Image 1 (cartoon, each protein chain N blue to C red):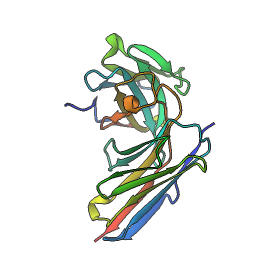
Image 2: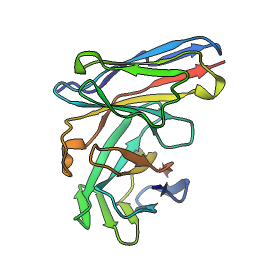
Image 3: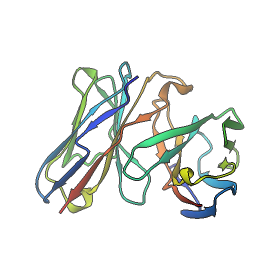
Length: 112
Length: 118
């Protein structure tokens, strides 16, 4: 059974610092991995999707890496801003129909 | 392009009452998902539809939860009777959907319905 873990559960950094968020999964047989952002009281917004054959994906200040063999992904957010404060969730796609298994998320606070 | 729509946004009911949630996916999306997100946890898949057929409902508590997707578009999730532990955010998502390993199954989420059972 696939299990997805995100550590730490919460993180607070001063504005301008780089953020490093970790995600680990137990079964390397995945189709892809997605990083989502969730603001309080809102749904999930997809940030990056990394196919299982890729090593990393970039979008603006965001960079996500994937090491499938070790079951790890890392999301880097450069030069953090207060607007980056949110909960970040990772999810792995586990079957051909698109089923996602989520981690519990990392709650990030960026202080001015 | 309009996103995934859900209603209501908030609902408060007493235990043993019934409640229904509605979801309208992105136009043209064949796959629809219902998730339950309990405070402090990641979303858990309850049921997945491909058009109007069920692909996966292995984690749906079928003694009290039911879902349907008539005509392969809108979907309704019902809880009857509700329990205190059903208090959660219910998220609906949709994807284009096809049997492949690409981005056809990238999911787009609605704003969710926050259910409080007292």
